[in-house]
Length: 184
Image (tube, rainbow, N blue to C red; front, side, top):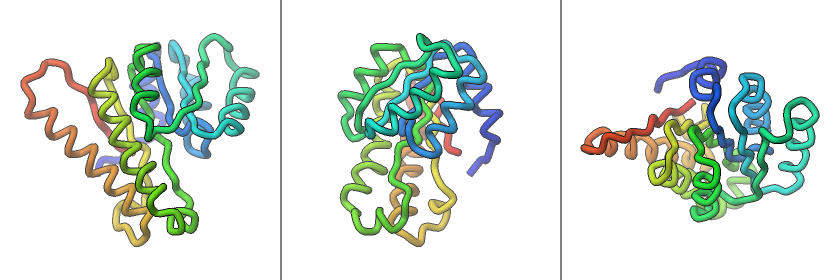
């Protein structure tokens, strides 16, 4: 597992590009949005399932940054069609996939919903990245995925394995178009 600082990753994959953050209203996603806007992307697309969380981060960001550079979308990462629609509409270059259920007690009590969101949501977003013009896909994972002792850690580890498999499959492909899959 390669570890890079968030500043290094954000700078390299953000400047003058169209960036999408899934889970944009969550604790990790909202901080990514704040940091990304400091580097001045061409556009920042916020994708979030919670209307309240999306509204709050949007209001915060438009107070500090140009409104026309921020686009907000309600959506679930488990809805592949919606993710693809947004990526195609704006020609997203980089996806920071932070959408995940991370609260261990909540995940342990809602295993099916958590598996759908953390595993299938990641798979959907990665497949959309392959199907559209996305250049870089960054999975924001968790230290709990290294040696999972909880269901939440296991779902995040599964998401990492999906990304590794897609990256490996792509490396064997004869296609000239390559996506950089990475995890932090």
